[in-house]
Image (cartoon, rainbow, N blue to C red):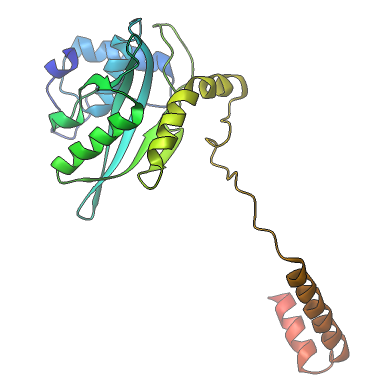
Length: 239
């Protein structure tokens, strides 16, 4: 509720120097500056504030950055909130700020992370936007003195078939994904952007036809190296 006491910044001018690549220490430093100056803020500043204000709350056992990409007409828009899970009930809610109240704070009443995202999707519909993609980052560690790196986008998910299953799977995986990132500096499959699907096997008879055709072509090139066939091969090789 405290975040909503701040005025929304409609000017387009940023009053605070923010970098999402400088780690958690920078987030807390910037949040304290935001509290001290009490100037208008936008969604990123609100997430910095939310991370700072909830850092020592035992009632929340997961705090995950949740970003959105929406479309209205031909234009695309970005937004971010902090998704939080109540430790006692296991239910999800969100903290943030927006021009539209339905795209910011949500009470922790949602049974799963996917149902929270679904509610945001419906809220975007109310605002005449289509939600096309979401991004989920690594969970934030508790405490005010952590120097852990931040990963804002780990799961990049279009809202197509089975998106809800992938979102809920990530909500269960995110703690060990964070530990993996801390120990290796990378991300495990399937969150590292590599495909886990094997390449389709080429049928044996097709392989034999390819080999036969290749051998035939090589034979023709050798036999006609002084004619047009040889000239074409030389041209291809030089190009």
